[in-house]
Image (tube, rainbow, N blue to C red; front, side, top):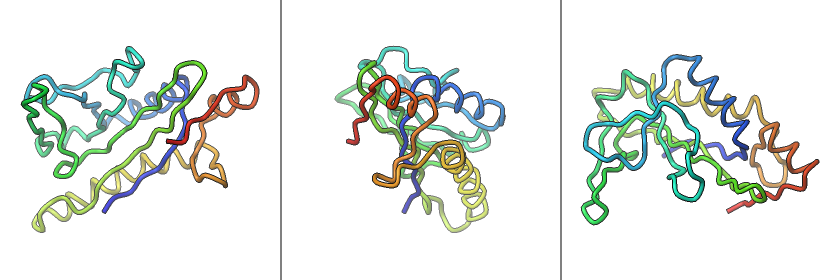
Amino acid sequence: MGKQVNFYMLPEDQLAFEKWLKARGDVCFLKQPQTTSELEIAATLVVSEMGKTWLDVYLARPIDLEDVLVDFIPTQNYWLVDDSQSPVVEFGRCFYDGRVLGRGRLYFRTGFLSEDEVEKELEFAKWAGKLLRWIRAHYERDPKTGIYIAPHAKNWVLNEGGQLRIV
């Protein structure tokens, strides 16, 4: 089982979200894919090359890093964060090419830890829920699609003819 929120963010909106995350002081950005089995932390959420950089990254609390697992993908020669067994929040960043803005999402699984770690799981779920609530509190929800739209993205659609991609 999991929880998620879908949204549209332009790069300016993503920077505001990143600023809020960094101000919290309790989050790491995990690269995807990983080049080694040791966790690689990114300094920023900025997409360096749209169309070449993976849009999915993971958010994790520093205190949970020891519990984050990675799986080796031999055919690709890289490691991927195992979100089914790790206390992480998937951050699917929005595709943006100047004309079209793709949907992004925050998603986390609940119920991934063993019974003897229930309290740790509850603390992670509280933390992850705050990330989703930030989106809901700061973005406007479209009543037709249920997808949240960030302020810069909304302005871009209304005043500059930007197009939103739902899938």
